[in-house]
Length: 271
Image (tube, rainbow, N blue to C red; front, side, top):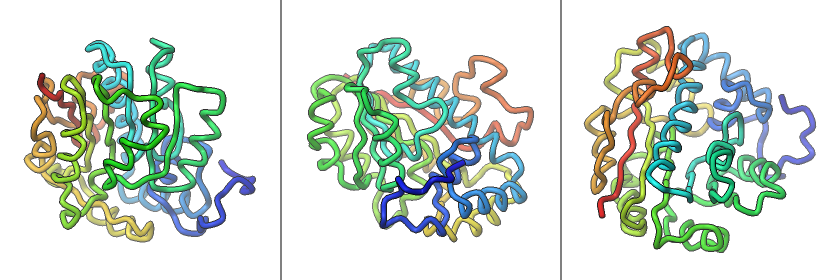
């Protein structure tokens, strides 16, 4: 857990919890503050399985990345990447092929500061601070242009991100801007809190999250599926996170309810 705060950007209020740092805490990461740990524990009391759900989302990232690599993808864009923690995308893909290139994007300065520290010495990775809505700014950023060839397929990740995007931002239009810029054969991976799953404590947990100044917006299966418009959804479709092509016991939970949360899916832009 973080004790030396000298690296923290001056504009960051460490007394206000943040979803990315709470997530890091649930994954037993080191990049969180007391406010994040307090909220994390509060939500754990409401939904004891939430830590398992965070772990399963991380496992989905690994499986989705491996699926994309099997299809020949060697460049990746992770938007809303959060605090670098166990099982980072670049570690997964570069372990298989060191030539893989990864750009991380987050709007929170703490997440980007940590990512830059983690990536020092790795000239095939970069981290930039930007907002999801600024698709052209992200795709045309110097770091992105240097590492990613937009004329070739890219693996785009938006995990546990879109449920922080209100309908007033028009998430479908945001996704369309990325889709239009991606080359055929590119992939989109999404995970999203489910509104129509039988999960006790979800409403209370969402209420607790309001202290982070980020209100989660759970969506139904149909709504999450609609985010893949213009992509061919990969089997087994949009399913509970743990149910997306599990590869072993470590990809599952002993709690069937947790296995259904959140929704996850991968789509491929057709040729």
